[in-house]
Image (cartoon, rainbow, N blue to C red):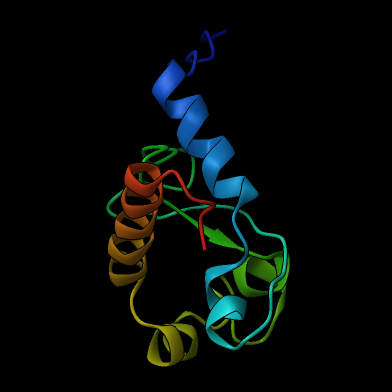
Length: 106
């Protein structure tokens, strides 16, 4: 049985930060909904987890249960909110800005 990879301190901090943020998509629509962590998959199989740094905050609906969500309606989701990579860049900029200014994210 393969050993589970232990998360680094930086990975744990990233995942905690993302989990504490409001959903990116809902926030764009003027609502603050608690997010969960969405790992952006790029060239990884279903059994392979992408980097913990390629993560964005999405609520359960925008992540996996709504008709327009990353997993059920990706094309419509990205048309409305931008690609996952675009969202990742914006989220990373906001995290950096807030850390520099010692502010709460979003």
